[in-house]
Length: 255
Image (cartoon, rainbow, N blue to C red; front, top):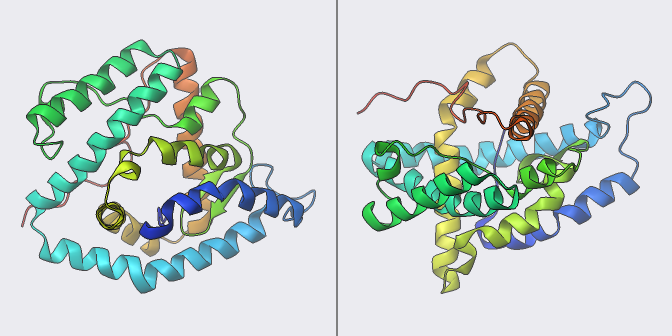
């Protein structure tokens, strides 16, 4: 469950994700007739998960831990709000592509309110106004229009994905407003801060998972596939989308 990437190389990593998926297929990563049909590349995926975990142990988790220790919670909340606000704009685009009128309206309303009245998104004014977040990406848009999920796939540094979501990554990269920040040094600084913020928000969850007596790989795979499938299916039925906070640990106490 490591949403990791190298800030300075994020666009190129995303752009090559489809090539990595194709290479895995050519290399014959399938495990035979007894393989999990959702995870025919399990040997490769487990190896890549171990690699990502090592990177996390050596670099990401220590940095994220230090970040939470030295940065006041109020500041960390503002950073998370800022990146979530940028994501609301891309959610607006994808909700529109899915012909989800209410979701598109909510997303653009959230982005506008938080950008104008929330100091560029640092304050989550839209939530206080009762405007729901309708989080979407291009992988879910493909699913909305019938593109199957495809096998589970663990990407280098980026972590859990599927073939469909991997194909969607270059488009999602273009929809990331950080991509258009100049100069490049500022863009890379934002990429780095986003990685640290994302990892810091997962510290407690990953600690609980590590302490549990279960196969972390299988748990992460099954949870990822369930959430992605649920998001697409609820949109197809026109019902309320999944709660993105479902299953999360309670917020940490203020310090």
